[in-house]
Image (tube, rainbow, N blue to C red; front, top):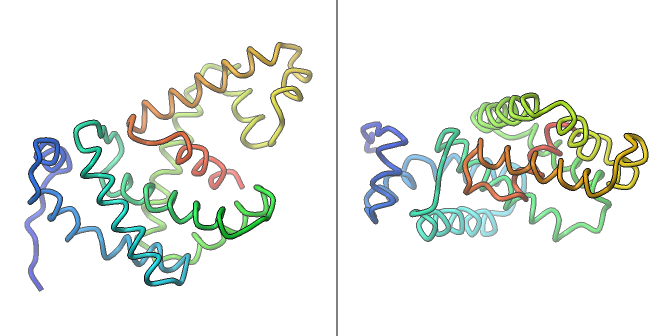
Length: 198
């Protein structure tokens, strides 16, 4: 087996953004196997997991000029795979959201040690970002995501308008997205936050 010489994330992404296919091949060779194992441990479907990994790398290539990774490349790739796995759960199940999240989270617990390390890195990063939000914004965001309250319920509890609630949640999601890197979708952020607090 060929041992690839380590290349820093920043150098890889700089090369990738310039259209260097060798950089993409390097990322694929280093990370694809462990990403596949992480997905397979949750879905138990070889073909589906192969499709997911392929989709992730195609997406990285197609969006290479816009990607901004503010965590590690490994964590970014894992989050991308995690969202696609979650999406498969969502498509296959008619369960209510909370039950689905709990089931999905239990599957993450049974993945390999490498996956758990990356998952914990994302958990710590997102929690840190949420903790740094302005007090009222943090309170509203947590009531929405942790207590699963509607905008109307939060507005009644805090005696403020639903428009203000929407503004706080928008600010929170934007802050998290910017801090993680703009290429993280709102869906990934929301999924990870539910996983953290389920």
